[in-house]
Each structure stands twice: as structure tokens, then as C-alpha cells.
Image (cartoon, rainbow, N blue to C red; front, side, top):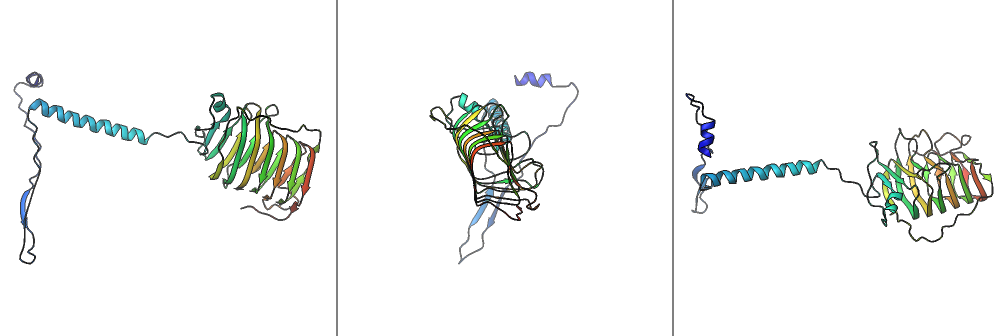
Length: 309
């Protein structure tokens, strides 16, 4: 075979210089300094490796090169792989799809299309036992519409037995287009407070059996630019939704905390501070007249100058 290749690449009358590669000479001896009359000669040289047989030598060299190429390809390919995030990392999580696939809890999701750190929970048509968000920092100086948004459509709402907002701090809060059987707003301070809920007969929401519900692990001790809970894909049901010690900052084109399309048995808002520094004559805490309420308890809420930075 080698004779065939030699004949194939031989040009009659043309002699090419022989090329070779040789390691630099490394073969020398030196003497160490004498210590208490004792010294030692040290000799350094390249180790010698000999592979017998021409074809065997070629095969070994080819194998080593092949392994090097394969290893390099795997290394650089692995460096370019983006792993799917696991809840509650910033991403889009389809709770209803996970439930349809008979999963017991949320696992992984896809990264948001925009380069943001959004935690987007798509719950349309899901049946959930509990949703919990605890000790979370959200917000961005500018460029966002909301820091925390729970919404659907007029046809697709989130129905919960109990929703609790406890220890919220945000520049603004708005709730509307919802039906609340029992509303409790207590021990809150706001830079302008407006509660204009409309009295109406609203059915109490009580979740029955939790059999078949999906478990959504708590999101806690984290930070995101915003949190979105989206039920626009279909009616969703939850036993409880708790949002505790969520703190937001920044300037928003909408409201920092935006809640709508809710049907709730009991909604509690307590121990929260809301204000953008515009003054108490411009309410930053608003429960709009599009919120229908059967009974309400409004105690210990005060208006004072507040600026959330």
C-alpha cells in the first residue's frame, strides 16, 4: 500500500527535499553544590519511546490524533450547551402541561424569549394545591411593565380558596376585574390609598379534594426581575396562594404589583408598604371598582408619605 501511495504522488524528474522533525537535544550533566562535602551529579535527557513496526506506528499515531479530536469536539460542544432550568430558576414553566403528563411536580422549563430573569408560571387549566412565594426581591430600575403580575382573561380566571399577600413592599399596587367573597385589608401603609370595591353577591370559593392536584415547589429566598402567573390559557384552580415578603423597586409603565381575573373565597392583604413618593393625593394602593366584594374588613390602614427605592 505504501509503495502504491509513493508511486501515486511521485512526479518524474522532480525531487523534493526530505522533511523531518527532530526534538531539540536535551542531554547534559551538571553537578549540585557541595553541602558538607557531599554533592551529586544530575543528568537530564529526553525519555526514549520506540514503537516497532511501520504500520503499527502509523495506527498508534492515528489513534492518538483521533482521540484528541474527539475529546476536543466533545469539550467545545458541551461548553455550548445550555441546560434547561429547574423550577424555581428564572424560566417559563407550563404547570397545566406538566399535569397533563401526569407529573407530580414542576421540574424544568424553557428560558424566556427576552434576555430577562423572569419567573413565568403558566397555569392555564391546572389544578394546584398550593402556590408559595416567600422572601423574594423583584424589580428593575426601568423597562418593565410590572414586577409581579397575576392575570388571565375575562373568560379564564384563577379561582382560589385563599390568597394571602403579607409583607409586600412595592412602589404601586393595583387589583381589579376580580370577584372576592371576603376581602380583608389590614395593617397596611400607602402613599395614597384607594379602595373602591363594589358590593356584590360573590360565591365563596372552596376547593374540595386535592386528589390529582399538581405540586408546585415554593419559590423562596430568590431574586428575579419579575414574576408572572398566567392563567390566560384556561380556568385554573388552587387551594391557596401565598405571597410573603416580596419586595419590589423600580419605575413601571404599569403597576409594580398587578392582580386581576381572580375569583377568591378569601383575599388577605396585610403588613404591606406601598408608595412611589407622588403624595397621598395620588393613590399608589388601589383596589378598583371592577373588584366585586361580598364582605370586607378594612382596619389599621394609613396614608403617609412613602417612597420605595
